[in-house]
Image (tube, rainbow, N blue to C red):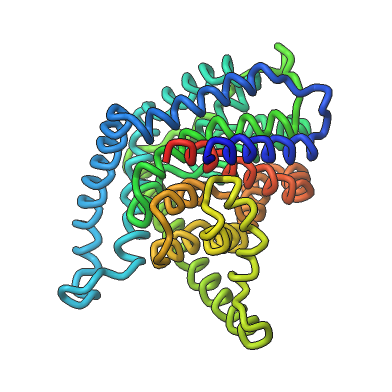
Length: 393
């Protein structure tokens, strides 16, 4: 039965993407089939094989070691804030390690390891996805650098981008997550779901963008020129990345305070008027999507509530709600967890538009105009990834 529901779910995703397509006659189906097969293969390997378990275990152990090292710095500065024997505050245990991970990313950037990986993995993907080299590079870079920082590396091209290529670049940024916060996710949901989502979202982002926004890149247009960062000394670079990581942690903390408080206020108002919380009502709206992803109908409403929370606030708020929710089956938790690992929410529209606007004012305004379409496509990517994962959970 789950296979029938999964097939129906995949059909629904592709029909919804097809309905929003800007030019259905230009959709190329062969790359879509290839990427769908690759998604199935990777989902099977990562979630249903011993090799996948070993890979994920190794990935998770690396992040656990890094988080332990981050804890040394955190304890030195904030030691004693938490009561002895009590769980450390969320800000210290989950958000502050972002500072250390950001510093490591800066070092890998400085010694040219990450640019090499991003560039050549992107070139290899361009042979599979039927998109341009720049789009493929951007998809990989977004998953490592983050939805704001990635545009700096292609800032020379931003002003020259036609609308359709700009959409694909922004869609990749919203469909993925930043490597600097992967460790934070792994403290709230299981590492295997985080890793599976990272891989599935990469291919899913290309697939949905190829349907919603199909086009062909000519040889003349298909030039990959990545902006080199201004040469800095090692310690200048390190200080900059450490401060960037701290800004991300503070920003996420501020957004959590605001969103959690606002959701609590809205829930209180709705309970007083309707007897149901706002999240419960949204759960009924999203329940059909949870069901086609493979969630049992008896659990579709609470699962839909978490999905809706992620869209109207962010993935951190939704993951906190998921970790505190009881009564959900392991299969439902796995499917919803994969859905949550992306930047597909309303606040990301402003973040991406602001990042582009900071580099090119006119193009930033263009991004703001198709912001809702970006969110629509990125949400379909999350549904697609969760449905694929559900086949093997």
